[in-house]
Image (cartoon, rainbow, N blue to C red; front, side):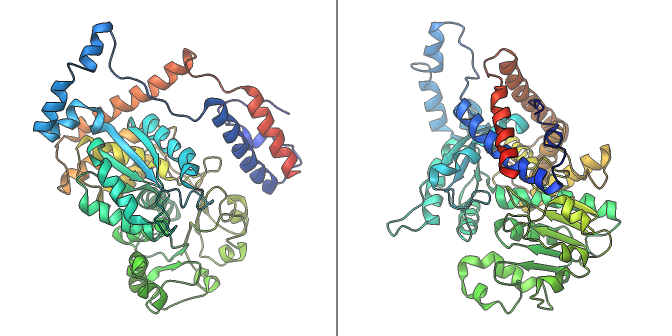
Length: 484
């Protein structure tokens, strides 16, 4: 078998020539999962702590620690706002999860979420120049149930040490209560990335997809498969961006959302779903096959697996249809199958297919923007501003049906996004610090360049080991053997 370069850029080409597109798609999933496990074991995770201050000599320990550091403690005691200047708090994010809704794997136990949370920390630093800590917590109460109040109390207790909190992989309906309570009661931004981050990036992709298709947000019919935290928040941002609620239909695991869904209305924990039930689908269409007829857009964040979305549904959609199937780790239908069924533009949450609509494009820049101006919160307007920033960046450098949104390796997009979010925070009145856009852009770019430069310096000087080729070879063999 052909050796794989470490950038994995030629992954499609290393599988046997007689593999079908479906076999290649399945093999890539097996390969990436196998390589993830072996490489995480090799490195013992992917995050470490590195000092940012120098040690010119032994006596500097008396400055960085006792007795000199006493002045830092008393200064912050007298003025808590100095914690953002005299410590790393102003650039530090807590990534908090109870690991109850991790990717498509569901409840993986509290420590089971560490791989994903470390991944968020990794991307925040490399893409956004933001420091972060992965915190997976046990949210069980005495009855053995996941208690949202335990997460709320935990975040309130850690607030003095962080500039922002990124909530992650908390199952619904607990995620709604946790987010909405903490947004009201904390004086730092509390952000639910699965919901708000995914919504922002999805909106960015849809803005450009509609431009390419020659359609307008206010005119298109949109069907949404899945009504969890991600899709319900996407729906909220779509409405804020001009989507017509009469043309919006959401489906959960039981049926569509509409005004007669008494099961949702009576369960107060699902108040976000009920808000959408009241606003959308006035014709009360309950059959997804019927809903898909003539639809311009499908946004699916539901059950992983290539048979969740049926090709016949896509074939019944309008001309130049847009299909976002973003379940992880396996999309609801693979892009090649969606295009065979008639889709004009496809997108998934994965980077090994064209058009990756993934929150990794959002949270590094959004959180950096909020931190730079010491925002009290992250508003929906800030999320929309991030979406518009991403869409504008991609449009400026050129878009087409297979390239509607920036990629994670386009490093220059993140300081632009951070600056636009910072400006919106100032406009919304939630910023403690006022910067010009140029100042915000320069701060973000400097910090992002530093983070990327530090990582590559550690690689070049072999402080970070190269991935052994045998790990890639073994992962490729496992993938081919399983799919054959």
